[in-house]
View 1 (tube, rainbow, N blue to C red):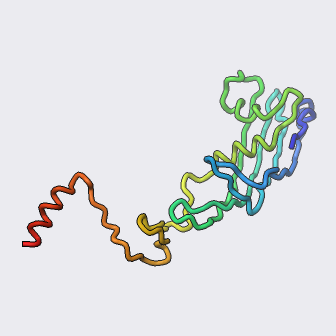
View 2 (view 1 turned 180 degrees about the vertical axis):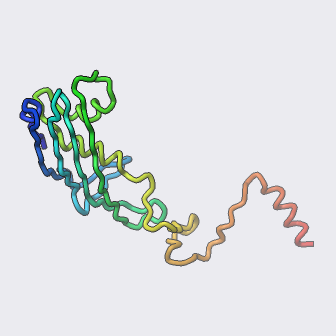
View 3 (view 1 turned 180 degrees about the horizontal axis):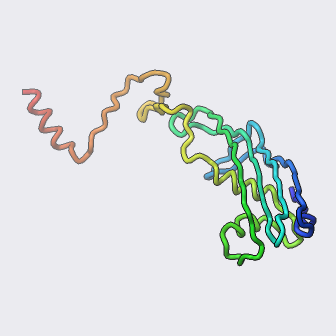
Length: 175
């Protein structure tokens, strides 16, 4: 969705308030497509603060279903965050803050809300998704979910560099 910001830029003390919804049904992150349980929506407010300064505020919220990084159980990831920027249009275009928001504003003063939401959702995606803090994950040998109980596998892993030493110890055990 494109928001027309031309009035905000041309009239001092002008404010534009708009509620937008993410257009896609899925979210593509790290080569995987995830399904939205609740599509993200953003309450956006753009205000002309005078002297070629623009105040930008957005509250974004949504609910995404992602497999747990350890046990692969579908897990809900909640997005609920605010973005607030004060942009001085008098500054050089090399300024990071100006580039971050202004990259979504076209020459005809239209704001690309989909591009903005994509960037912010990527930035706020959690580094690790767990179904619960103490998730035990899957057994490396049989694949059983260890949150449901222990499996009968021998999970003792030995350093392969110590294999010869283990053979020596096992020979002396048998004697």
